[in-house]
Amino acid sequence: MGKRILIAENHADISSGIEFLLRHEGHDVEVVCSASDAIERVEDFWPDLAFIEVALPDRSGLALCRELRALPNDSQPYIVLFSNSRREEVQASSGAAGADDLVILPFVTLDLLARLRPHLEEHVTER
Image (cartoon, rainbow, N blue to C red; front, side, top):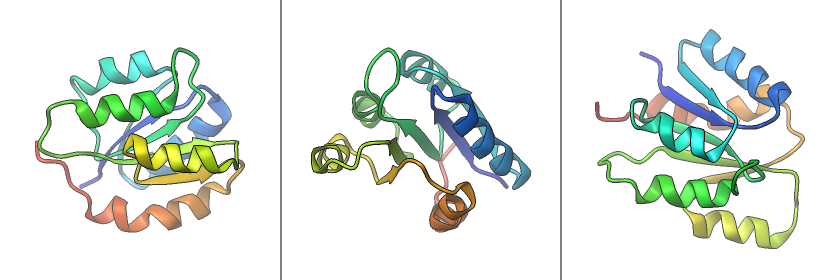
């Protein structure tokens, strides 16, 4: 059974590539373009894994990560933040916000999926 995956990314070229590959592997994928849409969507679609862009249009992905971690749910998603900044403070902030991983843009989608394969196969949300 596939995992539930939320992609909060405001660049269609990035989100569509990831979405296509994940759906092809049998995962249930939801794509949103803002932090507000992500919070609204998780009410009905609690993800096993979330890909979140740090620079979302309405507020930072770091804030969204903290909000997801604060929501009452027995199973927390594995959260991967995307950033085009290599600055050390982004790396430190991502961990402090509760992210499990930080991926620097640009990246090769297949490499990203290979890197996350253990989490796509093992992390299961209680439903």
